[in-house]
Length: 447
Image (cartoon, rainbow, N blue to C red; front, side):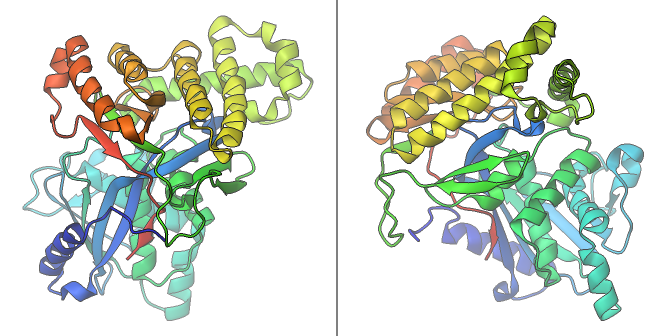
């Protein structure tokens, strides 16, 4: 495989040094989980309805350095947040929304407050998922008649990068899953970990998202587009026609990934807009299924045949009609996009990507003025094949595929134009990372 540009050796050495000091172990004993961020060029907002989606990872993300603790203790520090999170793997965890904040995590006396250590909920969620779904923990206990090992770890995101809209939450959850599994010599398939991370986000944290994010992070391969049917979990890697299959040779460099940040930051679990859109999609599905005589099926739009949608969409009130229109049109765009990618037709793929962005605004009605303005700036930038929101569209960034020869000029254009429209938000961004030029990444792994 061609050499990855992330993580660098300096990044690995730094995190190994920190964990070595925390645990009193040699740097050679430190393992590192590499869990990349993802982008979704096509397939926006339809994974939670069982739609078909596309995704790829980028060469930025989460690094979690760790060593097995040798006992049941988990001790974690963060490069982005204060305090140290501690809990034990032999403690039974409950979904977060059923318990008070003070009961979620235990914080040592040096930690400023439970609120500042709220970032530890993803680690506890990973333990909850393994306890409640996989039975892997029970298997280890029954086999060895001893408790699982915890980990001593240090987690950090790519330096200076606002990860809003890049599925940093899934990257973090997966990092903790892989670390706990590695520390206890558990063999868990990517498909199983997709389910475990869904449990973290849906059941433990109460977010009603689908499986796009974790699927991309766990299944991607460098240079490929990952396709997934979120109803059947069927997945495959789409190689572009001009991708060189000899991985010892660099793939031809026809595009770069441009990330442009808005300055908007808000967690999805505190934003009612995301969950309300999911509920609206399900209400639309329920009406359409009943109209078609299939009311016994689960109310997801993937269970509605396209012919039934066309026949009965007039029964939907306007906002529900827009949600359904987005679902069915986006599924169509994904199908066409997969063909375009496989044929190396980046311009056609980009046009579909931009159309996805427009449908997200008009039909799914996500986004807000700053994000929409940023999307429109990207569409005007030189060399851009296509652009859309990255993530749920309620905060964060936009993503674009850009001709390699024009990417520096495109980045300069966005840096100059967006602050004219949103001077306050733009002033809150780090000028060095407000617009980033990225490359395709690989899947999550332990090194």
